[in-house]
Length: 194
Image (cartoon, rainbow, N blue to C red; front, side, top):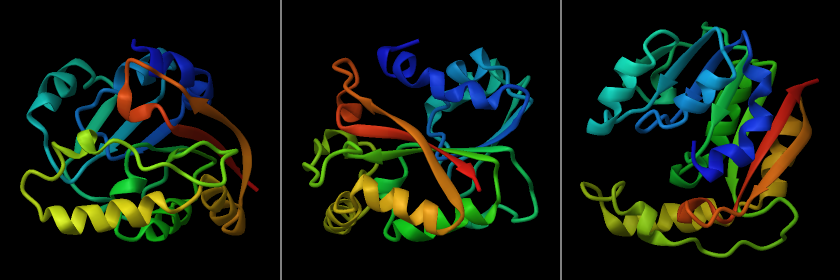
């Protein structure tokens, strides 16, 4: 398990024996950490099926159900105890719709990663290197606009949105992880339903 996962792993104790919905699973690289915390079941969604996910689908099929769909297409009547959303907010053209969708599913806990550190007022633009894979078949100018808009949302604004929609901010961990360049300026936040 890499340094990043070791840092945030304590927040994931809430998934033990719970059903989990993971937004934007990408290649399933979080599933190793999930496995350490023994969830009952994980439904992992992503609109793209990255070639590197195949080995993880096989390895973790005892508790992970991967669906190649975006959150907008996921049926609303499924219930999950915990929702995990990381590496997704900065890709959204409408980040608040993502937050509303998460809340509409009424989980007990939400684990949500934001760009920037919780205590900071202003965010720095992160390295665009992490976008290289995500923009290969899309309009670069549109992606830059989306990135700038999403990064302009302060972590405190994310907290305010969840609190307004019925969740209490419980805690967070700021990530300072040298071996994972795209995660050097993020906060993993934990919310609980009021």
